[in-house]
Image (cartoon, rainbow, N blue to C red; front, side):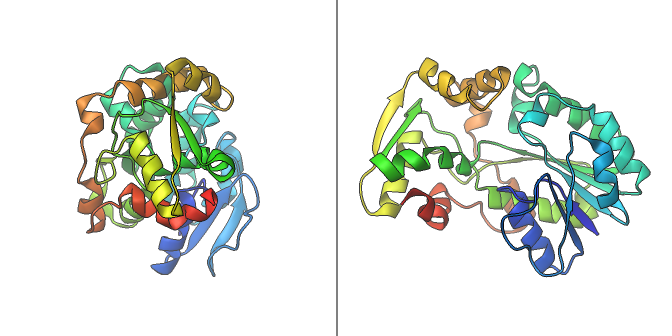
Length: 281
């Protein structure tokens, strides 16, 4: 059996479907009851990674576990060791952690110190392990959905700074492989999309999918910071803005890891938009 935490999110939901289609026995774990129907045969369990003991019933009989931390748990919560102690004592053999590219590119960044702690704890757990380090998510564009629907406008900073954002479905596809294939144990994979794309071009792609223009308004860093502080801890906001505004060369490079793991190229941003265009109408 494979247990997927964060099972109702942008990564967890497609991952659960992939595993079920492959004939795996799957337990989908989330803090709340799913607002959609899970694939046939998939079991749902309510638990919170911020309370490791709440996860224990979900792990009974599990071979592998995907650890996908919510935004708040990237900043605080129980120690990573508390979670891994529960996982190991439950008999789980393999853990795959969804981390972040910034752990590798900016190892001293305060914003992602907790993810770094999780990586270290997973690697020292004595279990089989794999770590996925995705760059920025294509799905972050959902933050623009309301302004596109109501005003056909997108406001964002750093209009012409390009980054190879990744489709969360591709992260799910990579996780599917690493969870099920022990040959990838001990691997750390940086995952990106197939091309670097600027926020201005993302707006153009959304407009193309809608069949009408979307106006782009460039924000200052401070304006963007004020908005992001409404839903993200300050250290994470600062770290995110650093990457968006002054990325390192490695953060702008396209990785081949998705193709190596999945056997096909990563999907471009335009393909993500085409699948999710209803959110912007």
